[in-house]
Image 1 (cartoon, rainbow, N blue to C red):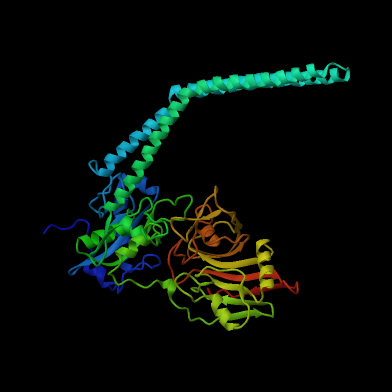
Image 2 (cartoon, one colour):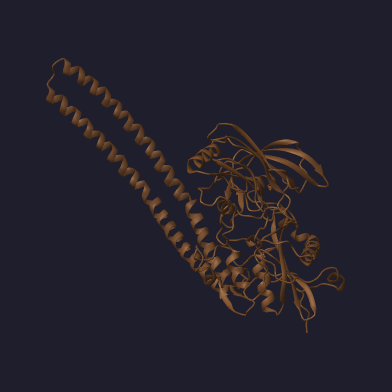
Length: 538
């Protein structure tokens, strides 16, 4: 039997150092298994040896490894998202679920037709005939405007003369007739120019109408091709069942697959494993190369699978596997520590791992725990912390106080300080980070930097200490955007050092090392200045 070049076997020495996973990886929140880390190191060594890919990989690409077993053999499969070197086929990596780049594929044939339409559209829009027509029309409009403005000045002068004649007793009927004649002449001048411009527009209209017909054909072909492509992506699951991407995404809010669905590393790996009799044990995905300017990606860091493309697909493909439970849905037994209360306000020290408010899949939250603690009262949460962040959260004990606190947050009259440990060294001792943020629609709840569409986000920071490749910092957020401190820390235009334990923007650890350390505000009823602190747990 011919060996599978895509199955990379672990040695007995490799396997002696760690036990096999008991459950398959939950792909949207995980700590990589040691065998996944070993497989990733070996994959990195392999791609470092391929100099022909160096420039492409430096631009950034997501890689994936899948630890699998077949009989007594344990090893790993490797994959990359999209294509590499303008092909989907490399011996070291699993192939694409559907190869869209082979010269004889239906996709390539239809793509050539669409590409030809693009060329026809570009040629028509930049043709000499169209350019000359636009220039002639612009020239004609300029001349028309000049003549019309000159005649309007003449009419204004004539009106002034008529007003003078009226004061001298000249016959009113003659003056009215002159005015009406000039207005009619202005209409004739305008109409004459409109007819000339319309005549010049004839070749331009013909070209643009043809361009619109080509665009319509391109759109229709693209939609039909995309649907046909997604029908060809027949995804397997561990039960041996198949479902194409159109079927998988039909029940999602979008209703159809987004562009690029099925081409990420994780679905490729599982598809190859199922089709070739390998038993999936664990998986991990990591980034290679530079980070995109908008998103946060660090070379060799592990990341969860994307939500928009992969969550519906993996939801299907993992059926039949014993998958780890979502760690975000686990219960938190840490008792609540009330650090301040009066008849108007309560401040609680939120433990890490607890939602601030109820989520879609779990009802347990800080808000509900505080409401149970003050059963029978009105309790409103004044602001929120990320699930993984610990520290001070304020609650209002009436709607009126809640509105006062909300207004204070909106006007930046409440100041907060966070303690964090960063996975990397920050050179400057202090500074300000100004990077506007927006939700990444393809990978909720991740945020991304967008100078064009993002909301303003401003953070001040000061370094407390540096030790062993880590930096302790104090963050003072001026605005309060979702994941603001996490993105500002991790982004290459921010501190370029993710918060330690940040599974979305950095590397998993025991916890997210971010703590809401203090908050300062004026009491909404007594107007007393209040500062509350919570000691850092790290």
